[in-house]
Image 1 (spheres, rainbow, N blue to C red):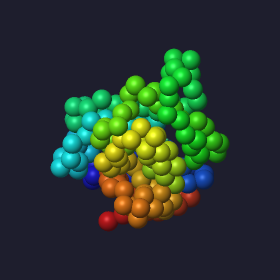
Image 2 (image 1 turned 180 degrees about the vertical axis):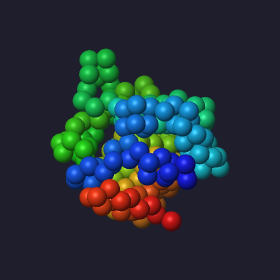
Image 3 (image 1 turned 90 degrees about the vertical axis):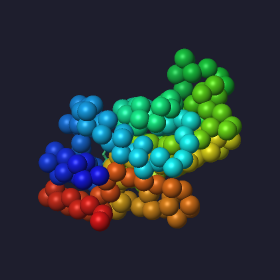
Image 4 (image 1 turned 135 degrees about the horizontal axis):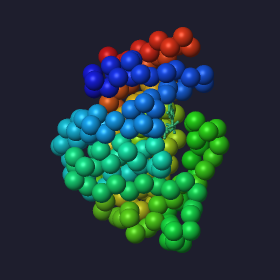
Amino acid sequence: MKALEERILKEGKVLPGGVLKVGSFLNQQIDIDFMMQMGEEAARLYNDVKITKVLTIETSGIAVAACVAAKLHAPVVFAKKNKSSNVGNEVYSTEIHSYTHGNDYTAVISKEYLNAGDLCLITDDFLANGCAVEGLIRLCEQAGAKVVGVVAAVEKGFQGGGDALREKGVRVESLAIVDEMTDDGKITFRK
Ligand code: 5GP
């Protein structure tokens, strides 16, 4: 998505450790008009399939998922990190490694909100090593739900998570794929 690439070039900041900061529009300050355009593009990419749930993980996936879901007219279901008292005991649960925090956490989804027969589109703000998406796929497997595909706002292609999923036969569409980021801030997108 050209407009997303341009926005990343204009406002993105490359941080140490291969982290791209896009807090000015995507995951701290949220430019909702722009995010809705991203949602529209995601819905266009998946307009050939039926989707009953848009799945993500709290926190930073929720805004992207909401904008995608608004265009698909499907509910968002987000996995909670670490079980909180309002989730209940009946949950699907899996361990996920966090790229940005460098630790492992438990992601849970209440069994009420993910069912056999659901057709799920997994979405997140970033797809890096693929741990978050793979965790969501495991939660779908536990529920007997089908993963229709994945849509990431930004895929960091140089970390390989997206391509590994594609090799496994998972449909992955990313709105922008960063293939290279240098320490001095140069960002190169996949053609
Ligand atoms: P993965 O599990 O694919 O390695 O990483 C994806 C998760 O880590 C996303 O949920 C995202 O929040 C976070 N993440 C990974 N790389 C970046 C990055 O460069 N910038 C930001 N802001 N978040 C990232």
